[in-house]
Length: 305
Image: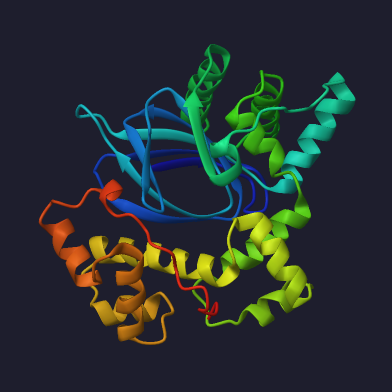
């Protein structure tokens, strides 16, 4: 079940998600930043070969792009979370309002490996933030008719205020580091073409950059060369399809934009030290733990197409 309050697909959105059944790993494609809170159950986020678990009472941040998430009900209760969605323009508008109206000096000195290298972070919510999400849950339950646009806007602003006025932390760092429209446009173009047959030269053209500038900026955003990153994203998605669908190996390779099945199998084996069929078999046998599969170095010469 999903309850939501929103007045337009182009405006901020506050949503409550509820899942009674365990539906396994899901592929999420976010076009906005999300800030959420776990009311009941646990949420697993799969980042390459790491699995992180968000638990009840934690606030989390998900960046724009692909995420692999698993919502797990617990103790006979449904999984429940409240999510706030923001575009970079939303954040800039709210922060300018807070600065002008309240004289809030917005800065952040926190930086750690999670903040720098991951598109998601989580931490226990402090008391005032926990109470805010609990009240928002009641608000969503009461707003079953037409949404109150003024009330929604106030809540969107209040959440940002509570985070940026708090002491420096991972959530605050990720939030403030992404308020850059140029960065958002560059990354969104890249994410939009993960599963399309496109060359790096064409991607550079779409982002209005020379090939050299594109490669340099790509490495700055994603910490690796374009061809390596694209292969890794496609292989990660193929793993999800192997364990969550009955599609054939060739169908999965084709869906993940590999030129042929043998090429897909070769790259998969090089990355994960086993064939796609063996990976699926181990999962079905219940012996596969995400941390067991350690990625190898993806081929440096493979083009992003």
